[in-house]
Structure formats: structure tokens, C-alpha cells
Length: 336
Length: 271
Image 1: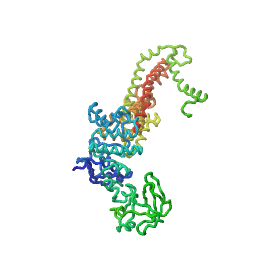
Image 2: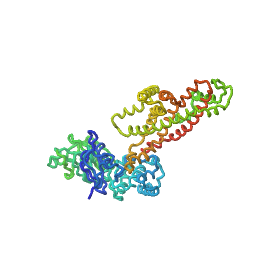
Image 3: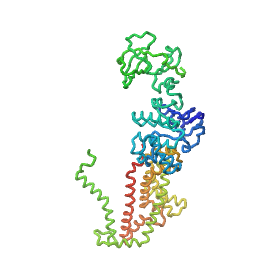
């Protein structure tokens, strides 16, 4: 099967800055694909390479089997939802949505009908006559989505589309985007720096750092089985354990990761049998509602543990013993 | 709230403001009054009598029409050149980063900062060096130097407030460069261009210094007026011309004011 989007050793360098560096990537048709990474990691440049706003310095990119180098954005069957939505302030909502059809020469009645349908799809029916300036942030976001979808793109690119929304709205939109993607069957490529968003929405996630892809996999893969220290640390702030520490528990001299929720925290006074637990000191507690996050100091090694709310907690500064199941200790590929 | 205007200003401030406004506008009123005076050799106050004969006299003087038509043509063509070059230049400077961008920006603005006499001398010597005879087109070139600046400044300010991703969005939705310019860029900078164009027209229309250096035998309206003031005949004709020009230009200025007043809604509100 041809990939929806395929990168072959694609690079985009800006002078000496390697924004995207020899990236190999295959996005499956119909999947919800997330590009996750800190700012400056190259994920947005990757998206712009697909949209055609950037051209690869070397390597090649194809979209549904067609070579994309040198093809301008307006000749690609790919549409983008921009981070700042980029609605046209001089047009009303209906004309904004119909814009793509208008420049293709679709007649007024027909394109307005299609735009109305797209607006209903994003649950904004009847908003056509308003100006973008009269809409809330969430509504503008939906208009931007409708404006992209009305062109029936083969791939929809979303550049941090939920970044400007407040928490409640963001959660609603996450669910809505996901069900919209399922219903339409269009390939979605979603750029975000929010690991929670990437894990909850995507079928597969690519983790970016320094212009390179560190790991591609299902959210579970990425979360449970990070391959490198960067992935372990960036996706869900896992505890990264040095090889010497890992050797004591697994016998292998490799970097390991241990999720904060896998650590059990007990009082030192209870006297856990020696060898099993890690003695540590509780540095601080951070109440998060449903859970409490504990910062721990195990002989100079800083660890985090997450325990359910309501657990009886030691006081700050108290000596504690940490225990975990061996199978939760994940060994990473990264060489020690 | 002290600044919402509900409180009345002290009486002293009111008087000062009134005096300021009178100082600005009373002389203009005098021009109007002298357009109706019966005394034609010098301006005496109060006017010995009032007459409307000067309107007919002005209407029948061919030199008035020649000067007026030359000024209008020069201003229109300079403004047209300025609109094209100024828009292109501002688009280049605000949309891309390239070596020497700041220098170009400065060089474009420089003609309006330079005293007109320097621009005038420079152009005159350049024209004679290149053996270009003084004509209608040398006046237009001289005026275009500062008209471009006005349009450029207005357009650059608007481009700066216009989200760059809007142009990308248009391309993304299938519009090529020309369609993007027509459907997205132009509607967003139109009011800025209108304001800049009108200002450019007005600057060109009353330009004296650069014109004296770049004009041959022709007289633009301001130069005609200067000449007229030296000659002691039919003086009120100048006043009639001044009055009519003022009333005629007031309309487009008011129109531009109303058109650009709510320009904030046009650009930048999409963010």
C-alpha cells in the first residue's frame, strides 16, 4: 500500500541549522498521526514540508505516491489548519469556508452549499454571515477546520490547533477531532508539543528532537517502551535510571525508565526487607487533584512518583522506601 | 474615571484650545474673504466692497486651467507610480528577510526626510547630466520620489499588522500568487493604499520646491500662485482658485477619513 505521506532521508536546513535532518517517515492512509516534540524540534518544519511551504534541502517527499518536491502548496491535495487559524478577516465565515472552492472556480450557489455543509460538520451551522472577528477562539478554530475540510483533502495537517484554547474546550475539541477523523477517514497529521494530547488522540506518534525522529510507534509503545532517554523523559516525564542503578535490579548495564505511577512509596520505619526497596527521602509533594506527585531523592538520584489521592503520605523530609515491580522497569535501547 | 470625558475641562484650557484652533484656521478664512473683495491690487482690511466677479474672471483665464490641469495630471501619475512601486517595495521588505533589507527600507524613506531643495538640486543635476530635457515627465519623476515613501510607509504598517499565515492559508487552499494577491492581500491593504495614495496626491499637488528644479516652462498650480502673488493684477483670482481647490479636496479627505477610520477591523483582527 502506498503511504499517505512518505519522507525519504528528507532534510530541511536553514544555513547551519538542521531543522529537519534526514528524516525517514511513512504515514499510513487514514491514520491519525501525531508529531510530538519540544519547540524547535523540527515537527512544524516537517508539517510545512508536507504542505509545500518549505522545500527539502535534500531527500525526497511523496504524497500518495506522487513526488512533492517543487510542487507549490496550491497544487497539493493537502490542507492545513493553522496555529493562529489564519482566517481572512475581510470575508465572512461562509466565504472563508468557501474560499478554496472559489479559487477553483466553483459557482457561487454550489460552493456556498458545500460551505454550509462543512460548517454543519464542525457544528457551526448558521454562522456563515458572521465575521471571524465576531467569533470566539473555539469557533474560529472550527471555521478553520471547515475551511480546510471543504476541499476534501487527502491529508489534513493540523499545526498545534488546540494550543490557544482553554483546558475544557481543548478536551472537547480533542474528542471531536478524533471522531471527525474516524468519520471522514482522512489522514490527519497533527503537530503538538503536548504529550497528553498526542497520546490520547493519535493512532501513531512520532517523537521529534533536534530535527530527528527519536521514535515512532503507537501511544502505548511510546509511553510504555521508550527507546531513548529523551523519549522517556519527554513523554510523560518518566524516571530515567542510570545503567548502574538498572544493573542492580535487572542485571543488565543499560539505561532504564520507570513510570512515576509504577513506584510505590512506603515509610522507612515499616522496615522493608533489604535489597528489595530503594531508600530515599521525600523532598516535596505536589497535589494534582486525582493524584499526588512526589519528588524523591534516592542517594542523589532525583525520582518522581505519582500516587492516587487519599494515600497516606509521609511528611516532607522523611526517609521512605520505594518499591516497584521488576516488569515495570523498562530497559532502553540507548547504549549505556 | 477621569479620562472618559464626563468631567468638564477647566475654563483656561478651553480658551487656550479655542485660541489654538482660531490661530490655525482664521488665516484660511481670510483667504475666503479676499476672494470676494473689490480691491484687486492689494489686500486691504476690511475689504472695501464685496463682489463675485472674480469667479467669472477666474473661469475665463486659460492660465488657471493650464496650471490646474498640469497639477492634476502630475499628481495622478506620480500617485499611480507610487502606488505600484510603494506596494511592491513594502511587500518585499515586510514579507521576506534578505541581506540589506534595513538599508533598502532606509533608502526608500530617505527622500521624504531630505529637504526638498536637496532632492531638487540632485534631480536637476542628474537630469542635465543625463541630457534629459525638462518636461512633464521630469516633474512626475521628482514628485514620485516622495510619493513612493508615503505609500510605502502606509503599506508597510498594514503588512506588519497582517498575519503572514493568511497568505500561506490562501496558497494552501489552492490560490496561486495572483489569486492570493487579488482575494487576500489587496482587500487587506486597500484602505492603507487609499490613505497613502490620497496623501501622495496631496503632497504632489502642493509641491513647490522640487517642482521649481525639475519643471521646464510649465507651471503647476502652486508655482502659478506664487507668480501671481508677485504681479499686482487681479489678485483675488488666486484666492478664488485657493478656495475652490480647498473645497474640492475637502471631500476626498473626509471620505478617506471615514473609510480608514474603522480600518482596525480589517487587518489584525483575525489573530
